[in-house]
Length: 212
Image (cartoon, rainbow, N blue to C red; front, side, top):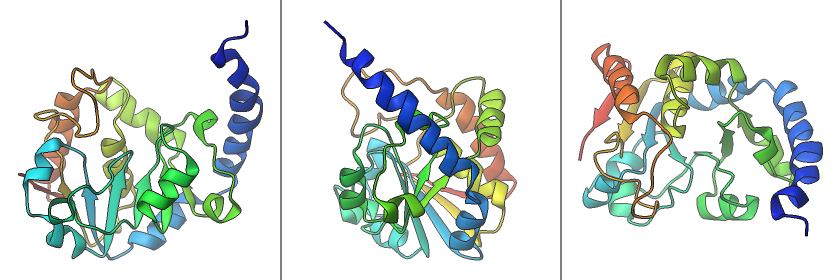
């Protein structure tokens, strides 16, 4: 009997991966994202469970650009805000789920694993921004482990360096679990190392962290 992983191999590695790399290599993603955030106030909304106990929603929505990540669906608008302009996409969601649950202006493919890029609709493909592999590699080397989506999104914004302001909500660096992960979930990320770097950026005045 052929395993599900073996059955998925042709689709993922012989179709999705080369197709995704083609889109990535032929697109000026930095220009696309730069045009969206240029001289605008940006809120990056993380998925720490502690965010759900706050009333930051109106403050988040007051930003000109609101970015969400992975499966960070809005469960409590009073805490999380209600608008999504960009979303960092995850292979755990289908194209339809991502588009319908977030309804963003653009998608950001942060992982370098193009076998996970399964978008098929031309309008969604055109609206996908790809995080360069050289950025991901630099992030991994600095942290010493695979970077989280939140870290990569922040790093991307700082690389472009054209937002009027960057404010983080829902980032407590592992103090509380990601609200959609099951109990006992073990993260592959080094939140302590990411916290130290992001706090350094905050001390430099490059971003602001709003704590619960």
